[in-house]
Length: 434
Image (cartoon, rainbow, N blue to C red; front, side, top):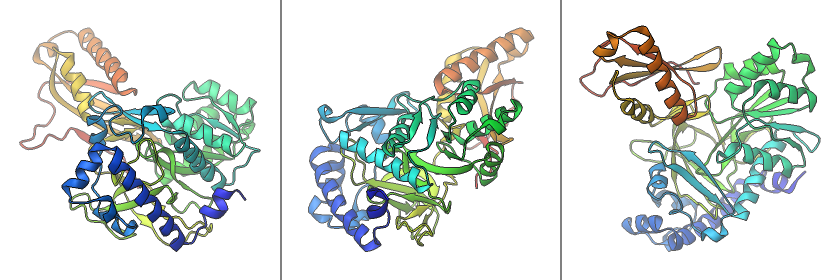
């Protein structure tokens, strides 16, 4: 059994707490020296690094937020000189600026270890062929899974996302045993494999899926169509990327690697720390990250933590599948979508439409649907059908460029969208995420 699995994953809780405390004290001291924003927030609370002696003092520390990354774009929150950063990744923000994260060599090594633990936790070995169909590039998904798979000696097939026909042919020809992608794309692949009559030609045994919410019903449907065991993973670029938490073979919650990340659950309104088992907002503190560490980062994901020991023998806390978010961000087919992004595109479109719109998200046959109703102006309403169709195409193209995902645009009659005297209800999310 590998060192990372035997000595760390099964560490007694009291020893794990001691390790966390040592690393937290180390992290707080170096961030106070090197990150101006963190130092200022500590000073505002009347705190000095010496006030933090163990994880029992974690709740004294200030929170950090996604807006901080935008305000200090691109490198203002790094805790090391850029000479020590060997890689950057990024995700999109509502303002158009990317949220940039940086990694030192040691950060990359730890990330690889997280993924290696995840893969071994579900029984994968150097005999597996792992097809990585997450996107490669600034997105953390592709490279995260890739390097971790190489760490356990598995054979990586770095196919990236898209090109469904090629995905299926590669699975068959290269005898892929594991598929890594978003659950909605896995569902689509399963349907395409069935239509092509290729199900019996697959060698798949497992799938690792994340980057978007998915239900247990969707898990079962994927498992049935691809004849695999489907595993859930959790991660976010700000904390590390994929592999912050993952299911083991028991599939009874996702183990959080607590020697690197300390999870908390808080009440999103009062910011009070909640006990294990209660649902609230997930907060993370990174205690080994060198390049881009974060203290008490509010993820906005709503879930709960499981303190009871897992049957697999791992001692690290487990988190339940997030059931939603405490802010207004939508995750549609693995892509983060903000209503403000859509509104900006519509406002820039100019004549022919009004500022009144409504976003409708649903899940049909385990796949997210994404429709946007936009009110026409009186002048466009009186125009011919071709003008309406052309404008719908124009808006569709602009939104795809901004969001990186397709939406169905419906230009509806003037004044047909319900008005509100209070806050407008811009989003109708009909999905039932359990």
